[in-house]
Length: 483
Ligand SMILES: [Zn+2]
Image 1 (cartoon, protein in one colour):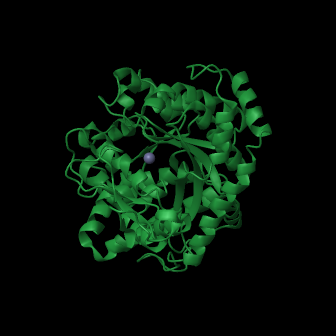
Image 2 (cartoon, protein in one colour; image 1 turned 90 degrees about the vertical axis):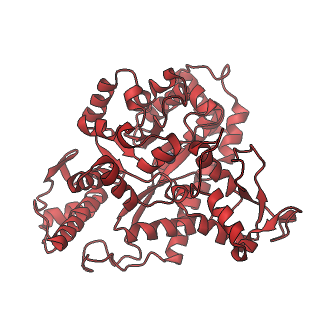
Image 3 (cartoon, helix red, strand yellow; image 1 turned 120 degrees about the vertical axis):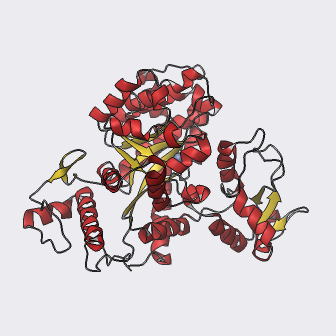
């Protein structure tokens, strides 16, 4: 999930009221504004004086006593009430929301508290959250260094190595500690807020492993890189992301985001994959997950559908693919699916996001093609605040719309941890084969299972295995409760 996209509009409104922000109309067409919808956005007050709003604007706080304005704000920050109109589709509305609430200070700790609390209430145990920390220094350096001979389709490793050296010697690493502090502050703030308390979800005994901590949901971060910018910025930010992920154990990987059909995302896709190919060779331990194939026929020319997932795997070294919706439009899709299955490249499946942004749902969704090809897959939410959903909603949708069974959903949950970028080894002897456990851990887990010493030691030293074992315990508790 994306952090800001996972936060509900109501939280943003409360924060804006506290900060004394103002509300302005969205100018028609910037970004896309549906006719007849009173789209609004937050803007800073005059002279940074809280609630000092320009003429034609109103205070965000006034929305708390003005229901129509409150409704407009919720609708402007989400897919609620959205109806496509001529020239404005779900994709436009979805991506417009982010600009509209961007006037807020980053309240990452409060946002983290909200998403972790919601996760705990749904019996989720681990979140890997995409977040973009400050990168202005890196971007400035990137623009200062420029880009060799314009945005060519091909760039050599030597050229990239030279750019990396230049960026590092100009002080790109100065921003690493800034970003580390932002992540640490968010986690600290979440602990202070502490609304995600230790009450376990219903039916799960209190003495179960993992509870009793201030919040039973573990969190790691993915360094989110914005792909829709010129190559000098994308490379500088990606380099910073690799540096942060190499330094901060809470940042477990990097991720590329933003509309994949945007002009620069399309023009530079191959170039950006070459950047990753090079940086992966320098930082092989940093995990890579990429939104790829978040496209549908007609959004881009057919050639644009033919290679993104393939290159994300082969050149981008992605061990997980976000969306992968256009997979059957790629060149040699069967070979690609086989490659993903053989290499255990997981696809993150976001059913609601794909329906509202791409218009792809039901039998048009490639989930069953992935399942048939034995590609590992897991359900995820992408932007649960903008879509106004939660992970449970996606499980229900998968059952209703895609006909998935309990065992399919169980597999999704196990697969998501198996491919999470948690530290340490997996619980399972063979990747994606959830039958034989390592270290003499018990084959059948019940609520009262006692662990042998080797198993216990193994779980204590391998975060991934520990989380996977905890999931098995929760399955046991749930399944025992329904018999
Ligand atoms: Zn996304």
